[in-house]
Image (tube, rainbow, N blue to C red):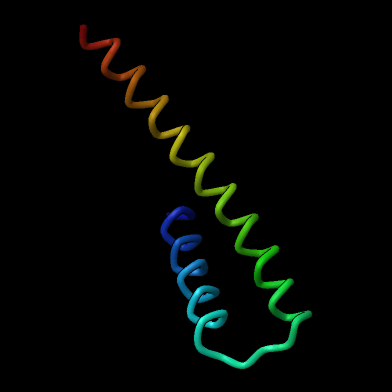
Length: 60
């Protein structure tokens, strides 16, 4: 469920960056938070791919 929450948070960050008038400092903080979330999501996807590959290898 962590992956889904990260995606929701990323969407929220994107909406704020696109639609609200925010300071440069807040923009940078949101960018940093978004970058961390993207890295986390990429790791989750890679782990899922590895799990699927292992599962498929066991079936062969």
